[in-house]
Length: 123
Image 1 (cartoon, one colour):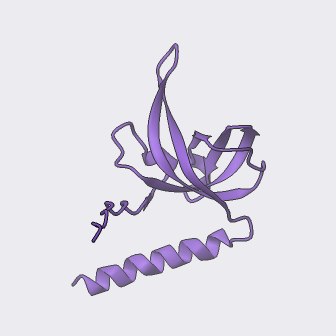
Image 2: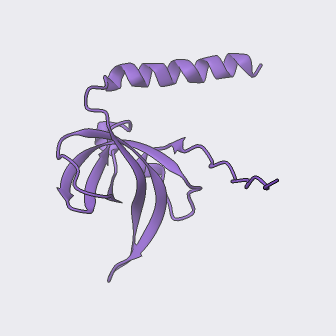
């Protein structure tokens, strides 16, 4: 009889804003953003769940080329790239899913409702 291999279960990605990311952020993370600039292998992503005036952006390392002005859910790990001036945060993307048809306002309402339900259930 052969032994079954046991694989550790992957941690669920936590939904975060780009502004809240740091080098110490626990991975993996989930970001919902819009592609501002794209080249093969890399894309500049602006957060669309954060306030418009405070929305951050991050370079995402991806496979292939993403479509500019399209909304995506990104799941990946936060990494740092050393530059001449400082260290720059990057998102090493393991999954990029196009959600351009998603109603972001409705999605935000759903997240708020989920938070209220969790608060009521935790009493």
